[in-house]
Structure formats: C-alpha cells, structure tokens
Length: 270
Image (tube, rainbow, N blue to C red; front, side):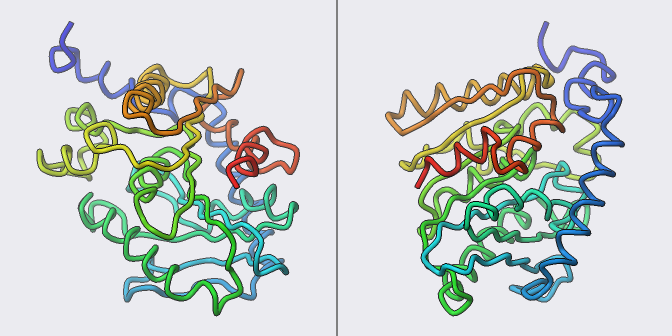
C-alpha cells in the first residue's frame, strides 16, 4: 500500500518513538537528571552564544589536552523538543578517554523552520571553527547526533571543520514526515524535503558510522540501512552498526559508557 494511503494513525505510529517504547519517559527523565549532574560538575564553559536567540548557544567540555579529538554532539527531539542541556551526560564516555565534547543548541519548530534549524547548525559550526583553538580544542572533530540530531549531524558532515561522523537512530528522508503528526509544527516544504534530506543529497566524502538499535521502529531502521547503501553506491566510507537489542532510547547507553560500543566506534574514526 502507498504511504499516503495508510491511515493517519498508522503513519503517526511509524515515527512515534515514545509510544513504541513504554519506558521512554523513564529513560528521558534519567538522562536529564544525569545531564544536570554532569553540567553542574563541568560548568566552566557552558552557555557560550553563537547567535542572539537563547537556544543558539554552545556547551563545551574541553579536554586537558588541546590536541585531543573532539566530539560535536547534536541533541534530538524531532526538531521541536529537548535541548543541549538534556544530553550532557552523553559526553561522559568519550570525556573519560580524554576527548573534548561540545554540544550546540538550535532553535526549534514551530518558531524555526527546517531551513532555519539547519542554518543554525551550520552557523554554530562556523563559530566553532573560528573559536575552537582559543578555547583549547585543536584535535580532529567527529560530528554526532541522535534522532533528529543525527539528521543534522549528517548534513553537518559537509562542513570543513568536520573530519568524520557518527549518526545514531536518525531520520534521513524527510518526505514521509510530511503526512505525520511531526509535521504539525515542522510544516515542511517540498524544497526543504529535497534540500535537507540526506538521502536526497550528494554524499559527503568523509567517514560515517550509521548506528541504529535492532529494536527501533522499522522506519528508522530502514532509513539507516538506505543511507548506508547510498553511501556505498557513492563510494564513500560508511559503516553500518546495528546495536543488538537497543531501542531508540537505550542506544544512547552505548555512547554514554566509556566501554560502550559507540564510544569505541567514535574513537576508531580518528
């Protein structure tokens, strides 16, 4: 059956991660609590503005070694929820290995369109490239993100400051979202779907690890698999990493832990 012919409830359920994982609220609350603790313990370089909007700020967790690698992590939330503050705990794994970890905020829908959201990330990366050395970050940069943040990270892979990418549980074709509840706030245009869907753009010629949980919704699993296939067809370096048994929320534990498989994957990229 054609996607557009499916009942609205079926289309909505295909992308509703919270409904698909009964423990999602518990996972989110635990991540926010741990993030608040991590931010409080590493408060020296927070809330650095790259723009005038309150969400256009960076949180930096710099390594003591300025030449250490750096992870840029972009939070998820379907471009309309959450903030960089909610993901601070995900810095822990690589920070324990001596990496710097930095996290940009960005404006959210409905205040901002998809074009504006992507523009915020590119603007943030420009600011980072210009200011990172004075802030003690000179090493290779891996860009990463989760869910909507993975979508933005793959687009950010094109930026000159970025060496490689690690995308977690992302959405890489925006077209199906246009007829789901997610679009109530996003209001995607046809131009935005073409311009900002990684699967509809030229593949960046940089290494990318594409990770997803085997217990994720099929739509997200398929997007990860399709992106990997497209990158192989374009002869770009791509690694597909299914995380056995992980859902859309528990996959983050593999990045948060110093011994996590996604922490190890990031380290192999440099």
